[in-house]
Length: 182
Image (cartoon, rainbow, N blue to C red; front, side):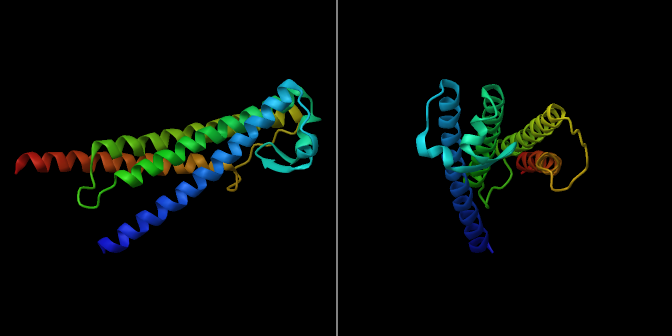
C-alpha cells in the first residue's frame, strides 16, 4: 500500500512540475507580447503565431489590432491569471513534497491546503468578474451556471478544498491531542 501511495505521489509531482514548466513558458511569452504591444515593437513573423487565452483566441497580430488599451487589458489579465495558477501549482507541489505517509497530519500542510482553497477562490472570482466585464464591454451580458465555466470550476474546487482543509484541521487537532495524552 505504501509503495503504491509513494508511486502515485511521485507521478503527481512529475505531472505538476510539467504543467508548471509549460505554464511558466506560456507566461513568459505573454509577458514578451505584452511589452512588445506597450512599446509598439514590431514582432515580425511572430505576429502570425496563433495563441488561445481566456479572453481571446487568434493570431498575435489580431490581439494587437484590437487597440493598445484592449490588448493590454487582455494580456495583463492573462498574465495575472497565469501567475495565480502558477502559485496554485507550486503550492500543490509543496504539499506533495511535504506529505509523509507516516506522519500525515501537520499544521504546515493544513495551511498549504487552506492556501490552495483561497487561491482557487481568488482565481474563480477574478475570472468571473473579468468575464462579466468583458461581456458588458461587448454588450452581450449572459450570466449562466454553465458547468464548463472556468470560474465555476474554480469556485467548486475552492469549496471542496476548503471543506477538506477544515476536516484536515480537525484531524491535526485530534493528532496533537492524541500526542499529548500518551
